[in-house]
Image (cartoon, rainbow over all chains, first blue to last red; front, side, top):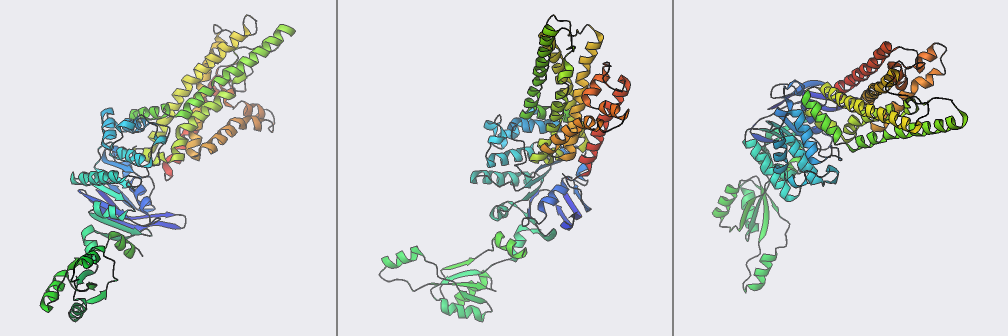
Length: 311
Length: 249
């Protein structure tokens, strides 16, 4: 559990974070979104006790980070995977952290295996690829088996297989009842991983909602493909919808079908309908006797939603 | 706390630059060897002149710089890479980290400094050979002079650690370290007596000799020297603790 209460950070004349309040609850993956310079990293640093808030407070499991009795057991974090000393081997890097937290050597070996770095344990970190450093950073965050996990841009530099692995890992950590706070600029990945979103802009809270609610609120158009598009458009407009003719997209499948068939089907057209549900459009089409070949709600992508609400 | 010391000991052991700095301390032996050689030559041709003694004084200005660097490197790399943030998230109190690093670098510097001092002494005696210009560890004065070297090295290492914690930069801390070690010698020239003598006695090499009670080595006796060296350690650690606990990381 992370609680951020009226958190404010002022650097000189810049208000990096301004009156931010939100909770990050256990048992789910919480995505933390914001443009560059929106105050995400500053907020994470304040939660981790690295930066002192100008006012307000950030609590981990009910207390400030510096008041945790055994901080490593309670919180694990990766702020920037590049922030390591390259001359050291991956094993020594983790073992040094393990000593500080009173964690066994066996756990270090296990953590390296979990992130797929067992074979590179004795290699110098300087020789690691960005993806390997990312994995090492995740191993460090998970080393102490903490209940609260904070990861800043953990997906960067991971290959597609690594991204899938991390998604499953984060989902399973949340399913175990842990608190997972994750920031990322990769919106598709975020929409697949996070249950809840906290979106900030210019240091202020913009959204704090479940992912599904947010996407539902930005429900997009319904795509309707019909050979009777013109008639259907009039019917739908009469029912109160706004209808736009979709720009025709080249469809190799239909053109090939048209070439092979001696009786080409009537020309289809696509309509973009807003203001009516998929069900209502289907009913209206049936009532008016218009054939419908495709009826697809186009969900707004998280990226579109994010760009829209952070404008 | 002991956990953090173990962690810092592993970090220092896995730091390449620390090994380079420790290897460079061998230059102290080489320098003393050269000095002892030329003095021995002079003795052979012109008869008794300056004695070699333990040989430590010829290279005494080098070792505090190098062990100070060891102290600098123990933390400056964490600041320059940003790893300090990871380290601090795993630690309960920031000054625990500082204290653990101080324990580790002071212990390493004391042991290595002592080893270098003995190495320097034996190098000098080997070069001097049978000539009556050397020293012997069976003489109490020579033995204490050699044994004081470890303390001087440890104090230099803690001063380096303190400077790097305050300045958070490797080059900045190295420049400040050299400036600080030379400062008493530079100020000495502009001060009237007896202030010049006091100022000149404040360098770490001079304090190391005064700690051993070497004749004509400075204005202070062994007990006052102990207080001054402890003062260096306390000032370094308290200033660094202020810096590390108050500032955003």
